[in-house]
Amino acid sequence: MFTTKRVPFYLVFPFARRSVLLFLAYSTVLCSLYSLAGWTFLAIPFVPVATIGTAVAFYVGFKSNSSYDRLWEARRIWGSLTNASRSWGIMVLDYLADRETSDPAHRTGLQTVHRELIYRHLAFLTALRVQLRQKPVWELHRDPAHEVVERIKEFRQCSLDKELSRFLPASEIEQLIRHPNPATVLMRQQSAQLRQLRDAGYLSDYYYVDMERMLVEFYTQQGGCERIKSFPFPRQYAFFSYVFVWLFIAVLPFGLLTEMAKTSAWHVWLTVPFFTVIAWVFNTMEIVGDTSENPFENSINDVPMTAICRNIEIDLRDMLGETELPKRVQSVNDILM
Image (tube, rainbow, N blue to C red; front, side):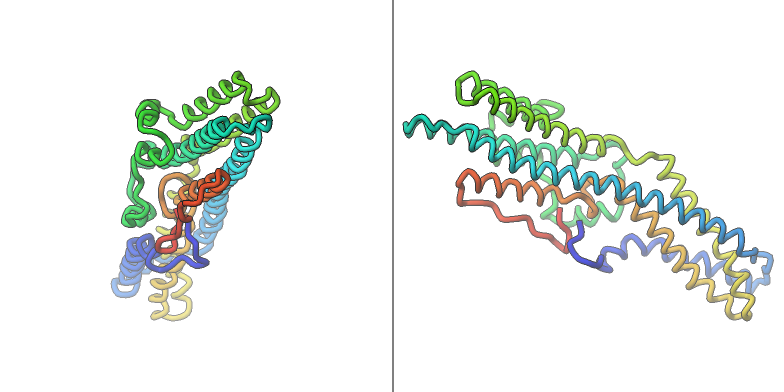
């Protein structure tokens, strides 16, 4: 996620350089054939070209809005996870509190349970984040949005076992990573421990049901993330948007030749800059929609899951009374992951 108001040029350039050079070369060749070789038949009426451009603009706008909806839904889900995580911390600390005894050993045991439940929840968020950033088949490609992130060492993702080592013992991690969906298993372990605490008399039935509902909420939010991750933007919309944009770009200079030639012979060469700008605008709209449709693919337009997880970790560990808290994740090169 970008943290600045304007996208810096050094990030725009990798997306634009090849296409802009192609547009310049394409329009220059056509203008040369028209002016120098006398191929005046290349000029066509601008009305059909403008009609195609209007239709393409509507279609690309629809794709961009749909891609933004997927991105914003992903961000809302992680916002809900943040709120639910804080609520989980309150429940763990207040529901699991024995006010009828002053035995220090008993209180120490409760503190251990508090830490286990909260740290396992932090492990759940970490596992979910790592799982979401694994690339499915349709994302196995390289583009500037991925390459920018891969060049920054701070954004290089560690293996799941190393990420979980901050919250879970090695023996538990070894068993956990054998499962196809570690995040789901962690929630199952949370539920099993809650049942044990209820059977041992640490939780009333009312508190037990309330905390189980919160686990269901975590499953719901995880399912929302997995729905976006596992179901790509429909190819019939994404592919034909790409086709229509490039069809319009291909025919645009022929219509511009007609309009520029109406002024004078040398005005024909203004087709080159005007075509390049118009083609770049349409191509950029297509790229914006294309790079926003998958918000969990570890690119510069991602939901900043690492930063969100760190903020939740700081809040929950602070609730536990810990003083040595990790620092908040800072943006690198104006990118927050």
